[in-house]
Length: 118
Length: 297
Image (tube, rainbow over all chains, first blue to last red; front, top):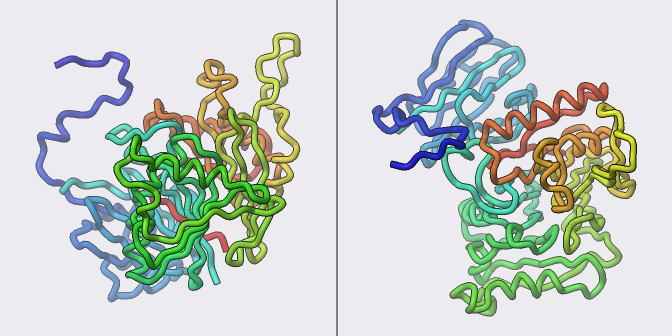
């Protein structure tokens, strides 16, 4: 197979050889950190409520703060009109498609997204 | 009442799908401006990102009629090639207006429809079932479904237009496909202080003045720009200077070069942030990426 020596970002062939890996949110800062939450469902809510799929018990979060939705092998984050907002890599957003290493800040809580593979 | 900006295509020149562009996206320019709960819809450019926007509109509106205003920066290929794949244009209940900038100016409409001649595409423009009509911004400004819109011509081969959108005290400026550097390589001029704000088009600075969000052409790094002077696009660091000079709050670096991988764009944005910091500015700089939506007001 021909290779391009100038190519800067070669695709890691290992990614084609491994099986599925789970999507996950890593709680880097906040009550209960460090902790990893596996994203196992198509829709999951992060919030303060004990009925939230991912509960982080701090008043910085709204009871229902954000929604994570999986579509076409990607997760999208949606701010559920939370007063403190959702910051993606420092930018306040309404919604966004998430990628490996994206940093979500909700008040003082910091979560890092890890991209899985279906 | 709220309004939003969403990026559907952020790449310049040509689509670049693939693993090197997963984060920022490979689709060519398309930006949606929409309100909620009223259904006001403005679409800036119709690059390949327009196809995804069309599919999303079909899901969101669930068969309800869609009315939208198309504002094209210009009609170079990468800004119109998504239109034939815009599914809402095929639905009879929908209505779209395609704007020129001066009274009676239907050139954009004519060129847009011209790309659907049978030589280029199997479906003729006349076969589209939505009501699609030419319109214009009168003397360069108009109010479209509650949005005040102003336009300004830009320096780009064949000309392009910037648009400023204002509603309820908030302002977004869309200014892509323009070469901001006015005298970048004149050997007769002394080299400017690298950290100083560069010379900028005054009218564009005024259009962008105080914007909550400036979406601008930041195609090249400084090094890349040296090989592309006169091509009609900007180095991202000069775009930072524009945003700082105009007192903008947030800057979306847009129209990424097709040769740039996600890592390249990350590096470009980091250089932009360093330049904003050196200017002593609190400007928030980010790379426009597909699927990103901001609440403006």
